[in-house]
Length: 162
Image 1 (spheres, rainbow, N blue to C red):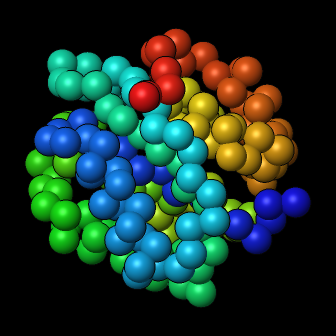
Image 2: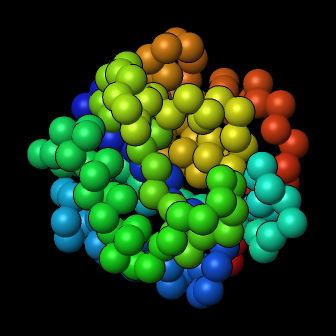
């Protein structure tokens, strides 16, 4: 169940956030594989560096022929294509694309750790993911996403965006 799926999280807090997430979804679908599910967009206060605009986030389920590293390289290229400039850690961003899970891989590459190491601590990622993959088992923690969301100590409010 959900073992062969890849899960991504996109986020934006600069410019037209909705359009940025929509453009990211289209570009991922055109260049990385097939998006088979997408959560609603969720709005949350900035995490890590709080003096910036609120984020919109969306979880995506992807089927792709790319390896995890190829996918990460492609996502970084898409961020660049969309105009993202990396200036400060946790700073404002036009677009952010993260791999949350690549199937059930547990790997540590130079620029990529699978599953995403911060996922269990971030409500803004868990909530959208729980809406499309509530029963996905975290391969390290051996808990499903619903349980991780219930146990998450991050209290930033995350609300469905309309």
